[in-house]
Image 1 (cartoon, helix red, strand yellow):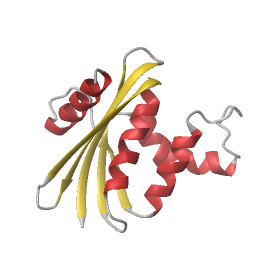
Image 2 (cartoon, rainbow, N blue to C red):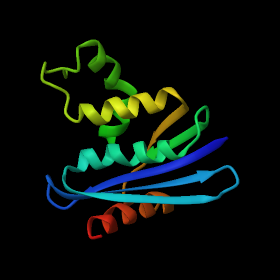
Image 3 (cartoon, helix red, strand yellow):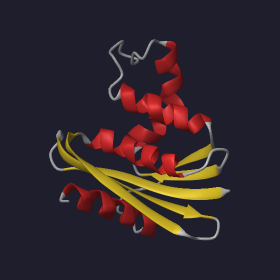
Image 4 (cartoon, rainbow, N blue to C red):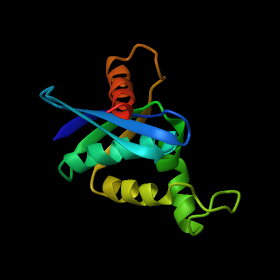
Length: 142
């Protein structure tokens, strides 16, 4: 099965109350909206939780395109994570990788799928990116 996913995270204060949103579109254009919140978190954590929660809803061995407006998420999962693992979860500056717990979960979930990660500019009129942002922002207040 093929899926297109849009994800976003938001935080009111950093750290502070946060929310995440994800939209899953299947090849038949069925749409599933997901969202959630945490009382004390960071924006980057919410950016990571959104694709984790979306991937948990998708069956293994799927072909997925994930759109995010977070360069932290996109670069982390496509460029940085292999070096983090090789270096014992230390950053290029020899410091512990922030949000390691979520990176480990996300990395494990990506192994079961064929995923292309795409960056989309935030607040640029992309319908589904705007909706993911709205879901994340609304989740903070719920």
